[in-house]
Image (cartoon, rainbow, N blue to C red):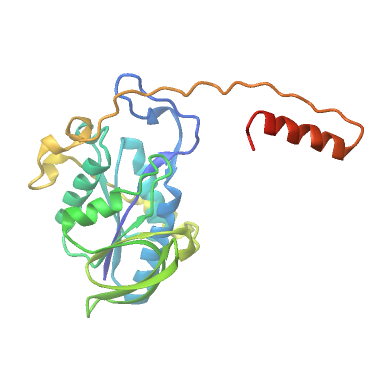
Length: 266
């Protein structure tokens, strides 16, 4: 059984700035962590390995310092790491990101399941996981809250999805892509043995030339069909506060209700 986990390096704080020239996040000035939702995908992949044997490959696309997040995933229990890193990938929107990750997964080869967090906490779109499935032409099972059964030999999987109306049970053939929610498990902490293995691991970055059949025109900021035209801060809300005085709560309530009716609020 081979599980691939796609993770993202995200800012560890909301105190981020936007590059006024490229309209993209200036990630170099803040510490980064594994996208919190992706830790649940890592945990579920490791549990699948423990149940069925095989291996877990973790993959990310990002700046050089994102290697730290890959090694943290290895410390948690992943076996191999793939790092897409290069200026050609910088500034990619969700479509280009999905395209690049799908190309890397094609190079990795045989796999049974791909796992992603339901969304990233910085972009908050939830589009990359489904985009990868679309690029690869495989089924996608989103918002998975429970993996009910999986049979790698028979090529089948059954999951429980969290939907607006409640929960639904869905079966699919393998390979398939899953995006998971927090309900699915409780991520483990890295082990001392895992930390040592991660420190010794040498991760060779892959660039566009390492991905056979990749069109450079479909990568990075220039290849992204989504363009940020302008970024601005909304105007500060202005208003006045009036304190209603009175001898009793009922009296103050009457004054307030009269004021709301007068201003046509109610």
